[in-house]
Image (cartoon, rainbow, N blue to C red; front, top):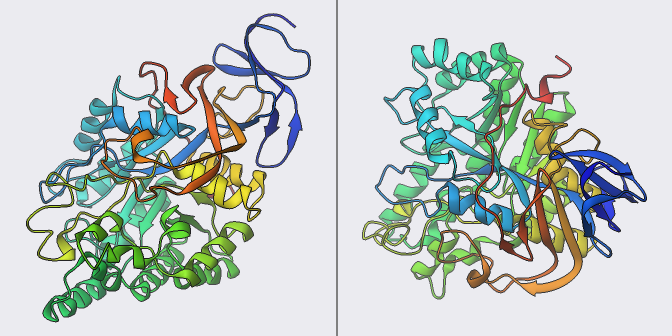
Length: 469
């Protein structure tokens, strides 16, 4: 049938629910037909390839200011270029409120940074660090109405932490405005206590970051966040869950009918706390410093079980890139104690290949579960579905073509992020994205970005987490 701009033929279409052989016809940037024998002025032969919804990375940090003057390694141009090369068509970065500043002004500043610079589509989460009466009474409700329908709060970090009273106040606003709250759940006082103890014993190498950010502190904070959400009667997302202890709190809550959603990340299925030792308890371990930190083999096994059984709804990168030099992690102060090492590791480009290789290629999860975790569920949870995260007539033609047999290692030299290292260097991957298509336009081909920045900022609807309220 004529009238189409582009047809993708010969591939195996994979969604969160099914897989089947079909052609996909695209018109004006949207999927217009799904069938057989379709014709168009342009044709892409996907024989031997999988055709998946474009990846949606729901947790990335780009061009974000830091309290200590270090510089994040990725701006919107490099971060979204890296995302596109890794099979993603949409990323959700954060607009971080600086204490003492208007939340609305911070959002507008991030929008200016992103405008005209994005290779993928973007949709902003908010970070609420200063819940003043002005923010809670006026700015936050107005921003939610404008399509910023999710925001993040922190239970640790000196410049971001909210106390229990503030968390409850913020949760009340979220419930009233039907905004989804993402929670960084680590107990601030416990971490500070452990940090002081370790420093007093002279244990200051990056390795001790993992001991200071103990899984017990994550478990306690997860339970506390769930309790606050239960008190207010609202859904929440516990982000970057690292191991068995916080998972059990989430499972406990779900067993009581609470709307608690969960996210995990590549570092928790590939790295362990031992990586923070570096070469010999040296500063090389700073490459792996993130919060929560990687745990142990038991936690890895628990995370995999959660990816299989539905404990985890989404799999995000928590891309938070700092160079391993004097502009990023390797500052004079960071050399004195792990507590000054900027927290975060890069991963937006390697998220999808790692989960595909370790999960699908090794038989740990199905292709359908892969699509759900990395595209469909993020779209549903964050108000983008069915425009995004779906292969259906009327959806945006955001597609990623995968070669499930292609095998090669992850190498820093091949990546497009602004960071000067990858924590996954040398990891052998089987199954790579070979073409990324955003609204019918190829933006990356065979690992290389091949188009100018043409991404759009997306306004989002209310999360499906509120659908049954």
